[in-house]
Length: 95
Image 1 (spheres, rainbow, N blue to C red):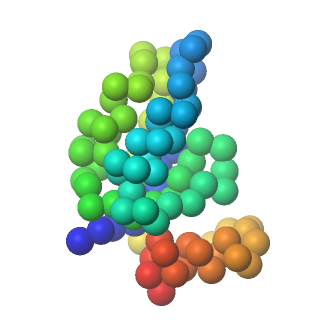
Image 2 (image 1 turned 180 degrees about the horizontal axis):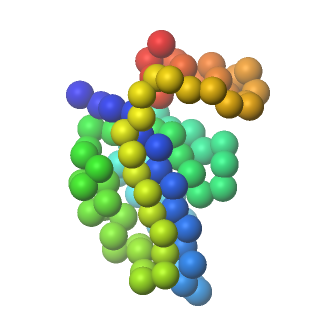
């Protein structure tokens, strides 16, 4: 059963490929439900655990990089556009 997660990262080492990280998040980690309304941060649904998600992204992380993943609950507030909230509610939290 999939769960909602917030994932954020900073690739600080020179020459790193954000494209590989983004492709892995969208195709290998998420169930297909994901959004990124911020730089280097994603809301997504995944069938993986936090440890499994980290294992998928480790090949792209270097010593100076930062990465954080946490399971999230449907207790949220923010400043987003109406269609963004609709996507989050319908696809990330399945409301």
